[in-house]
Image (tube, one colour):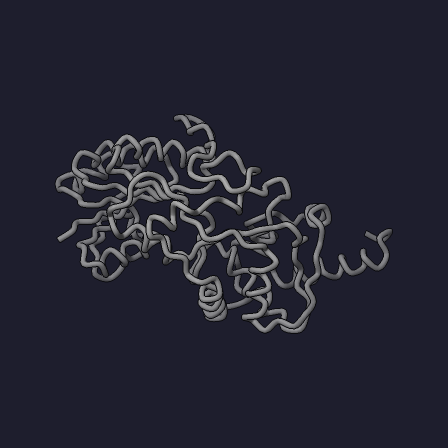
Length: 330
């Protein structure tokens, strides 16, 4: 039986990876601290990756596949050093944030990367991912490095894609605040598509795991249609939003998926290698349908990690309408 070790296995993405390997007939072990349960039918091996002895037990056996998604380069280096010799194939889930060029449209896997993080550096996500990639690349043909973009789907703990389903659904016939849409793009991938790519255990090299680039207006229109929202879309300029303390992309008091105008390449990467490797792309409308169901089940007005509360949004809409009526008042 195929022996798979998932470093993690209890989180949103890593849990899906563990379940898909289990469903493929593998014997799956999840190495995690144990704050959350491992998927049914897998083995939870409790351990903290800051503990030097964490790999002692998994290091006692051969692994057909190791999957790691850590964003701490030190954790990845230590895992490779401890388990690399006894592992037939190693998959590392990196990120599009490894790229340092966010201006050039259509870049493939050869795009320029950030300088890798060094011990003692202040934490920077992209640089940590690059350093982790270097550690895994030392395994040569046994290594498979996957660089996803924005991963979306039901249960998403980041709330970025789901924010828009909730925003349109809760508004009903009332307006929804959106950024300037002309010339803006977004590029997402369904969480199940990423997990499915990793379960063959035969990938190699580096692949951008991302969906097709789509105009942001198209994606928001599809979400709006799914919610049957009939209110107005009120566009605000980048300058107006930033002047009213609304952030880009993620986090509290933000408009998710909105990117600065000087980052046109961030959401328009090349995904030809992903498709050539057999990567699936769930139809965007299917992803939207499932996300909307999930948002309704979890609560449209719940506390979120990204987006605006409905109260914040309504206050901003009021200010925007007054500013449009009398610019001198803003």
